[in-house]
Image (cartoon, rainbow, N blue to C red; front, side, top):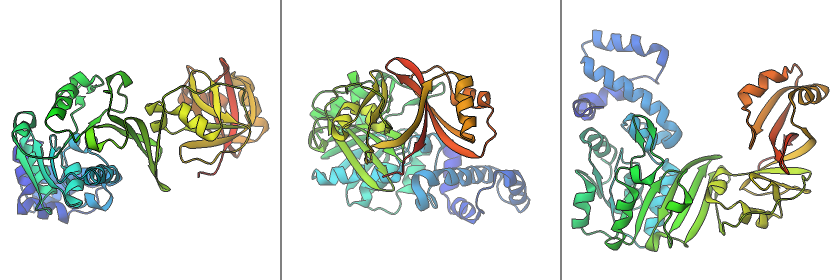
Length: 392
């Protein structure tokens, strides 16, 4: 989106047009656009409004009902913090006694909204004019929040604040930036601000290598409903405790795991197999979780845990093992057919096959349903026929 389109959208006419649109329907978008133009609406505004209608529909995954009334850019929506995670960020700042926060990379304003909603004073910097206009619109309900157009890395050190937050850009036209030195601004440059602002938090890519995590900070990986959505580094008073943590959020609430990154022991296959939450795996806390739950690894190199008794934990997805066999397609298909299975949920780790490749090779026609875990057990390629346990 360019600045001219953003100015159209934030105008009274633009907001009125967007709010008047029906729920987004991609099949009707072209026809609806033609109808609006035929009734005299500006063509540029119509195109921008229909794009916003689509983005608002997509944004409900992250923002729920708050998406109604917000404006978005495509890149801003993709990188924006989910509302419930942004609320956790905001509570962390407030609990640390922070009252004035500099948001160095406002984007569409998601984190600034959450910070302002808990009563903090927020100055949100955005270097792109169109995105700054979008953020200013999204923050319009909070008097204690303001958007500044400019380079935060140049301006922020001159301001007074007792907390800083940053969410550096991690995308290019070619895809994601995995090296923190390629972030915009680079991670090291953001972390260098700790000398001026000890209460500093910075979002990083969930795939960040542990070698890039400084000592003395809390590195936290977060999952929502089973999907890893972010990692963040919390410095100074924002760190609940130095080290690696995992925050697992879902219908059952939020659960935090912390501990050492020591590896778990491996042992024989038990009657139950468990898949650790992705945030736990990314944080390197599988060994800690194994100690906590009395489980062990199936294989020294694979993040599946096993035990002879059921385990109830918000950090695990469990399966009861019905049958185990060396992984070969024909014997696996025969075993599934013998059980009357027609639908399989395939999970794989440590083997060179994808569910999309395996499923059609099985040629199943039954009515039952099972989960097939294709992995390595004690170094051997193995297929496990299993049924999911009820979620905790």
